[in-house]
Length: 528
Image (cartoon, rainbow, N blue to C red; front, side):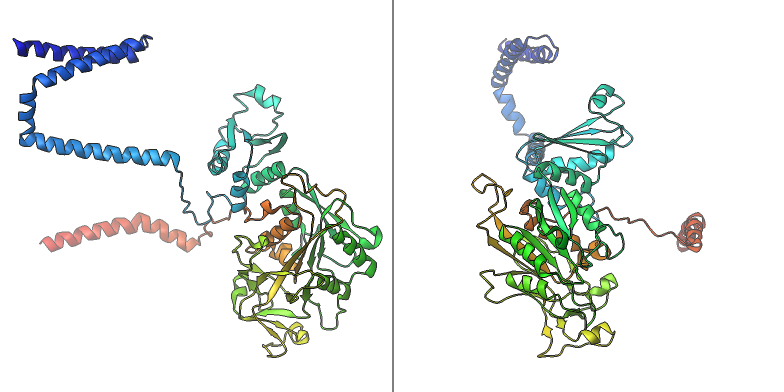
């Protein structure tokens, strides 16, 4: 009689639990009753199990029970591992990019920019199904790098009112909003997206002036020795650029963030040097890119060399030669030294990419400094290089060798930087007492070559990145010092010859079937 009652209690518990499930997921709106039913059902089932304790103990004493318990424990352990892995994976993200060109990884500059965002960056992508995936793949990388990046994908065909209110005229338009600033682009490339973020975060544009009138580099030229590629790079990082003839202007404009003297062939006049000195005295920023003489009897750039020396930097009357063979990577001669040794400085922070310098001269910090200005070396060549002083032999195509006591052995410094505090800053200098305002400083960077940033060599290794890092430091925008995004490489296979195509076609049609047939004949023959 007692067993029958306990059996009824067990069945009642089962019915109550099933009823709780039905009430909970049946959209009856009675969740509290589902809880009561579940608790009553579980209580009945516990009572039933306790009434059958002898049978339960006897069951667990059998071999099948032990095997079942072991299997259940194994299932629970595996389930626990999976739960733990998913729990950790949901909170700790880690991704690997095994592509040869790192096409699914953001450049250091892109990651650094979004990591330093102190407010949400709202990204609205107006793209149809035809092109939306390429935008989604790229922008998800930014969202993965920073929780402040919020992306929204909108189909302008399905939501025409929203597209019209945002004045969308082209499929694939991206609108980026940060604080009170807005930028729009029509590309999903990392260069364009990162460039738009730079414009949003840096605020006002900074102007870079390039001197003119002394046969300097042509900013508009697309030839190998032109600077058109560099000007495009400046635009992407929210700089504007312009030319200035100091002999006509007399003074350097107050809106000049950086003054660049790029490869002059004729020396500056003393009044021009005086205007540069006055500019530096008020906290100006100067980049000198001084090439070695074109020929042994070329007139020296006496005034420019003296200006560099005033800031603790000496430019040698030589040409750096590198016999390590590294220049052959670019199809260059020994007159194109390749450097991979970077000294400690904000410009070279985390910079480990090779740079090449066609026809460069040595740039050496003066020991002990000059006028309280102590320069720091930035980049050096290898031990297999030297500074050749016999310019006649080198420029005439004759053989050169290291002459001890006459030539300077490597490593040779090719660039140096120096800074000094300012007591009489420019009128538009930010107030240093305000938060995040940089302190007024005069900053000077000297390179022994101007061609390394030109079109012909600007795309090699880290040349343009190195120069842009120098500009970022000069303009006191250290957040722009990093490795920049690059255009995706074209890694398509070379066109196959007619003979190669025929071999692949006939190999697939005839070669493979004949191979299988031959293996079958061989197996049949061996069995016989």
